[in-house]
Length: 339
Ligand code: CUA
Image 1 (cartoon, protein in one colour):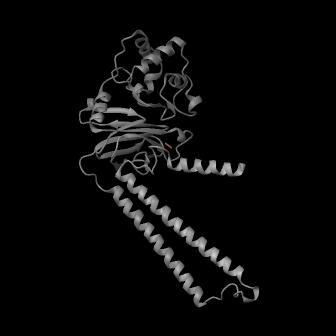
Image 2 (cartoon, rainbow, N blue to C red; image 1 turned 90 degrees about the horizontal axis):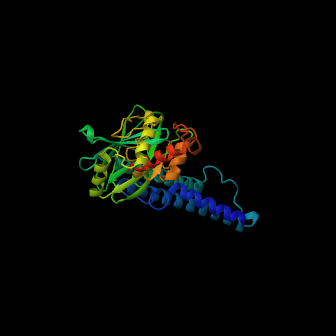
Image 3 (cartoon, rainbow, N blue to C red; image 1 turned 90 degrees about the vertical axis):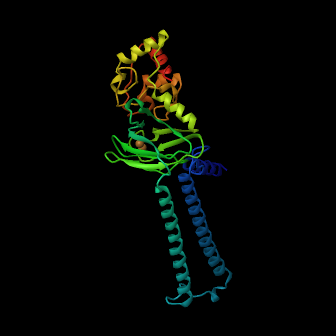
C-alpha cells in the first residue's frame, strides 16, 4: 500500500515536473511554434506506445506458445540460422524499425523547419541576456530614451511576431518557455535569435534549461502576454523614469538606496543609480516576483532578500545588507513606490 502510494506520488511528480501545470506547459501551447512541438511530442508518444505494445504482444505470444506445448513438441532452440521463418521475422522487424525511425526523423525535421520559418511581418525585437542567475531584458529603440531595460519579467503582445535575441554575460544558459517555444541556448559572445508568436494572452513561466551553476534551479522568467493595446500601455509606462517619491518615508528610502552600495550594481532611471551588474529596479514594484521567480514580490520577502540574499539564493552576487530598522523600512517604502 505504502509502495503503491509512493509510486503514484513519484509518477505524479515526474509528470508535473515534465509538463508543468495550468498555463505553463508544453502540452498547453499558446502559439504556433509551441503547438507544432506539442504535435511532435504526441506523435513520439503514440509511435513509442505502439512499438511497446507490439513488442510486448510478440513476446507474450511467444512465451504462451512455448508454454502450451508438450516438451517433446517444442521446436529446437534457438531456431537454426538461415531458417526461412527467422529470416522473414528478422526482415519484417528490421524494415518496421527503419520505417519507424525515418517517420520520426521526418517529423522532427518538418517541425524544425516550422520553428525556423521566417516571421510574417516586422517583429518586436527583445534582447534577452542571461546572468547567473537572472534574466536581463532590453526593448531597444532607435531613440535611446525610448529603450527599456527590465529584468525577470518578459512582456509580449498577442499576435505580433516576436524576435528574442539571446546572449549571455557569463556561462551558457538556455531559455525555455514551454507554452511558447522550444529551448534555445544563451551563449557568451554569440547572439542567437529565436522567433515566436503568442496567440492568446496569459501568464506563462519560462525557465533556464541548461545547468549554469549553484542556483540554476532558481532562474525562472515570468512571461506576460498582453492584448496589443495593453502591451503598448505597459511599454509606455516602462519607458517612464522612476516615480519621484512624495511622502517622507520613500524620500528617505531613496537617500538610503543612493547612500548604500545599491547603485554600484542596480540602476533606477531618473536617479544617479546606473549599475548594470544586477537587475534594473526602475519599476521593481510592478513585477510579480523577486530574484528571478524565487520569491513572490511582497514587502516581507523583499526585506528578507535585501537583508539576507545568501540565505535565499546561496552564491548569488547580491551581498547581505545590514541596515538599521528605520533605514530598512524607508528603503522598502521607496522600492514599493517604484511601480
Ligand atoms: Cu541559467 Cu541554468
